[in-house]
Image (cartoon, rainbow, N blue to C red; front, side):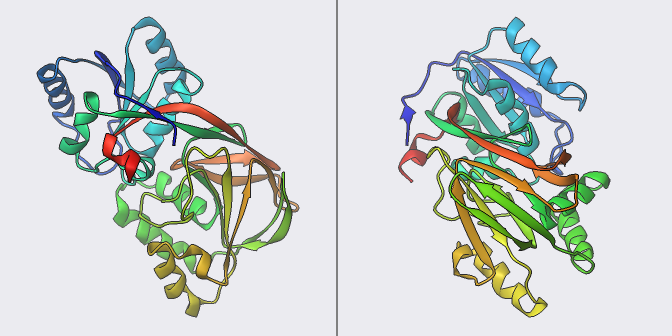
Length: 306
């Protein structure tokens, strides 16, 4: 697990997403700035607007010298900052403030803001892999099928938080029709129907569903995790295994490990794809490639030995 000792970080940029999760962001900027001052750091802030955020952030970093960039939001904000920093020496920090916060959980970062803030002065540096999924930057999980559909419906709605996600999932499950996927990897070929197909650089969804147990963020490989169509009577058992790291124990699941993959859906030119919590309509076939050791992240020192 590649890592280094704590860096001397003095000027920190915090990228704030005002609508991530269902948390009240009032006073957050003041709290973060005050904490940084107490520990001899200078806080600088960048607010996302949903319009040209990546370009604006990259330009901001070029003009404003900083030592690290913290994503203060959910998985979408982490994706944004990761895309801006991938391939550079500048590290990514995470203050998990979204609905799911999947990557921060996989990295062992506390989900309590007051317990995550010490990363500004106490941390180790871990270098992890990133992905490109149909041309989109990804650092955690992407998927096609049922979850991607639910994420798209969730993004269209006006209510945030896990309750809204569960309600939409229950509604969509009643009429959902699985697609047939053709998959070619650098190691094998697979074709068949799937309820959902996850492109996993990590292990855990923000909902604590473990889709890819015993995986590693820095092994130069990713996994394609398939849940095949299943009868309604099997749903409770599958759900139980997903929450207890038993993904591989079900007769309806399989995983393909690879470095490159091409996914297509017969007679379908585009598909809904969820990438780090954000839905996209991407062209098929979908090309996926891993970029080993391409992003430096700040993690609690104790998480390296977990």
